Length: 504
Image (tube, rainbow, N blue to C red; front, side, top):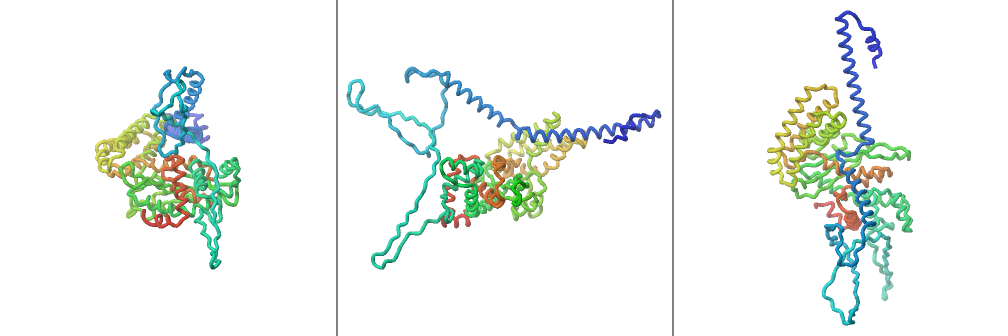
């Protein structure tokens, strides 16, 4: 604070010209203080929102959690208040649920409840005229089992030569784990976010002593078997006409100090052609780096000349240029700054910008699952006028407000990104935002506290685990476990390697 100027304001001159000069200085000082106060308020609002606010721009998750608690309480109350029917034919007032049939792939265990062979009234023989089948979904807790390979040692009766069948290929040579156990451990760690220490305690309750260091060794050795798969998925991602790129911070333990960590980065590259009816399966390719230097994405995507959806991070700039990839900016990041400003100040300009961006997303909702040609035609007819008007309107609003405000900063950010986002209007393979890639980071964020493992293990297994379970957060746990077990069974044998290393 300029205390000298404040002291000068205490004794005002009597000369009109000098008084006007002091008034101008005072006005300038007040404006400077107002901008500083607004800046500090914005920073405080950002810190409070990051620490205490919702991590999403919507309240869907919170509403879902509250609804779940209410449903549990209502079900408990209904259980105590309901009266059992006098007989089976008495209708009940309980709401009938529209249940989906139980999946066909589940094993069925039939239990026949027979009334007997003779009639209870006359003693005559009973014959079956039909049956009623009631299905009940049950769960059998996972259990350990020991698979024994018995290899008889045989000797020739003529020449006394010995013969014995060789051991099958093992997941870990001279190790005890089978593919089912290792896949269960990987799914628990990377899908269910269970640290190996916690898994060790879970196994101990079953009477199986597996130390965390043993599990870490198994995870590390498994990565070598899955590396060809990760490399192949990387090739698939880079073969598409467009991909999505993003990164997220992860804590990395420093080897020399078990209590100190540094911030490393996990990079995600996604190919997803489902919005425009592409035939390639969706896949995500993860890469790890100890810092956030721009050289890492450049090395990851060397030679790629398609379109990269990015969030405006300067580290991606090395990907774009002549004979390189094209950039598609993310409108979600544009919207996010206006959302912050609307929440903080209630600015009508920010609210109007949000409404116009919402019109663009209404068109995208209509364009989803259409061919690229249909998407371009729809966007040209409905989205392009809105996009053009939004850009012109923001330019006009910027001239009306002070350039030092956070609102002006949000508008300049939008005007800087919108020319880079315009390509989606003429290319049906592109999207309006980078949400496809950001969604692949959710499992990493959920298990962020699970990332304090030793450096080498984390560096190798996390990218492989992420690419192995393509869209695994949408799959059921059993599907992920089944897929991983099948992959591991094939990976430590020879038949899978020619397929992974060759063409798919």
